Each structure stands twice: as structure tokens, then as C-alpha cells.
Image (cartoon, rainbow, N blue to C red; front, top):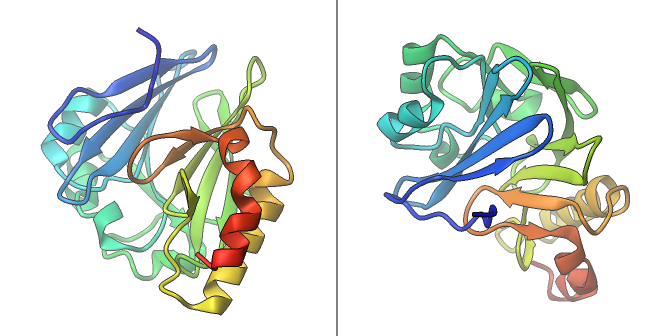
Length: 217
């Protein structure tokens, strides 16, 4: 079956097989968080995006080895299982430089905008988006044999940007960053993997950017 990205807590993961990378999406925890396991096909090295909750499910998904756990932002629901996953696997921790200070588990690799993070032979570009939190990051995989894949945490969802709690300055910042660093540089085919809920594409969301700006959320 083809990948659809619709997963439920307690249900099976969904797996997407790309030419160089395998993406496994699983839903965990009371807030229906998405966690994404990326595996390089050439080396079998693995990277987990957001050890959000339910460490046993995450560890079952990971299997034998895990090189890195990336936390997309400081909110606890995205790293509640981080300590347990790291203790079981010995994986290094990575997060955006500014948000790392608010994550209880020490961050070994501090990430800045434009950094390149590798999982085996696959390169992921780090983009910092300010607004949902001060130092949230997204990861962009520009598939050389396909379209880009964007792991957005809580910065971009189907239907809008992440929550900025009715703070006009925070919304303006996040909306600007999402436009300049995602929509302005990536094609409609780019696939979006958010921190909660179903996936989307930039093409599906792009026609609504004006609506988002007008409503302010």
C-alpha cells in the first residue's frame, strides 16, 4: 500500500520508502504526537524526530540501533520520552540552539539555521522558524530523485501555521519565517510531515496563505 500519513495512537505506523531514505511515522501519547524515524537505505543509520511519548512504542519502532534524536522544539509533549529513548539506545540528542535550554535532557548537538544534519548518507537542512517557540526547527530533505520532504514540528500544519497564542508579533514572525524559508523556496510537491495529525503538501496550503495572514493565526 502507498504511504498516506494517517496514523492513530495505538495503531500501526505508516512507512514511506524513498530512493535513499525510509520514513516511518507513528502516533504516540495523549496529544496525538507524531514521531518520525528516518533510516538511510545505504547505511541503515537511523534518526528519530521527536521522542514525544510512549517510549516502548518508539523503541519497538526503532529496533536495534539509533544514532540521533532530534527535538523540534521545547514543548514537553515533543520530548516526554526522550530520556528513556536515549538511555535505551545511547543516541545523541539534537535540538535548536535557543530551545535546547528548556529541554530537560541535555542537548549534545545544538542546531542553527542552515546547518546540515546527516543520517547516514542523507542530508537534512535545518531551518529555524520563530514564533511557536523562540527556537523551533524544521528539517528539510531535498530528495535528489523526487520532491522535498519537510518535517515541520508544530510550525506548519494542514490549514495554518502553529499556535502563537493570539500574540500578533509571534504570529507575524512565524508567518514570515514559514513563507521565506519554506513556501518561497520549495515547490508545491514538497511533502509536509507535521508534529500532530495528517500530512499535507505545500501545494495544498499555498492558496490559503492570504487567509492565514488576514485571520492572524
